[in-house]
Image (cartoon, rainbow, N blue to C red; front, side):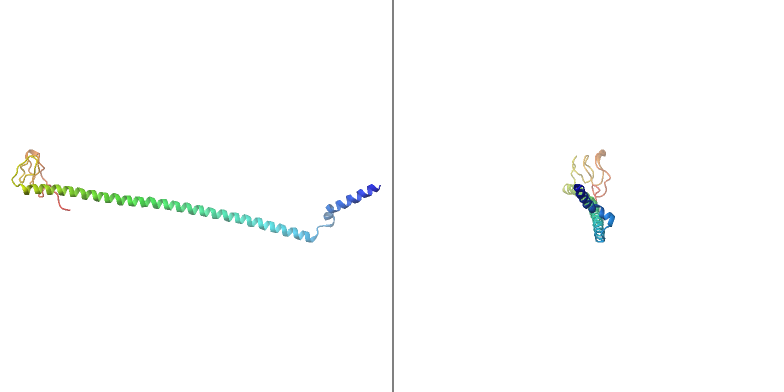
Length: 162
């Protein structure tokens, strides 16, 4: 029986720690501390969620800003290349026209010089002053048998100064 009393005492003491809050109620200080702890945990969790969302929004803004910058830089490069390509093409066109004009001017000067150097020469391949060259160029546009260059105007080859 002693054993039974000792067993009941140990059992009662052990269960008093578990059952006493249910029977006696919660200590008000412990309840207040638990409420404060829960509030702090909820506040920390809400703050962490807010900070995570702010970081995600900032990363999205940075990504979008970088994408817009790259797109505008690409568009600027395309437009710049197109502009300078157009400038180069127009400069090449002007240079080609000037080269062609210079070549035609040189040919006309050679024809005029040939007329001045030999005013009465008759040659099948040279320029004649009165259109007597069968294969040549005459200043009056009178080629023999249609082989000359006819109708080119007063200036020999019909060229005008730029």
